[in-house]
Amino acid sequence: MNFIFEYIRIIKPYFGRMKRRDGRGRIQVIEKNFQDEHEWRYIPKLDPNELPLMLIEEDDINAEKLNHIYTDSVPLTTKGVLNFGVEDVRYIFVDTAQNREKLIKFIRGKRRGKRLSPMEKDILISKIMVYDELKEDW
Image (cartoon, rainbow, N blue to C red; front, side, top):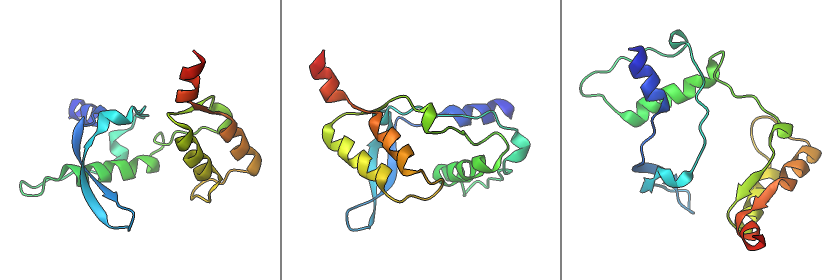
């Protein structure tokens, strides 16, 4: 059981379906190549006793539902939260100047969770690097 738990924690599908809101707020199901995200993942070493027990009946196997149960429970565990601050971020890479503008608006916007001071937001914004511009300098 421990092997299966460890394996499930680190896998991610390369391709699949994903729910996404369109410009009008309607939910659409789209086909997605998850490898395109090029994301880094933090996978904490968790105590299985802190996570919910998964009881699955034959007719009720839903990978997305099970994934949400585990994902939602990770922040409630003692080792599940990755704590870092603005000072820990060295660079933020985006592909285009247009995406830099979107990211700046996002950083400056009001968001849930820990609030950043205006100075912390400015520091984050100063760390944004645009790949297209760096590529031209080579």
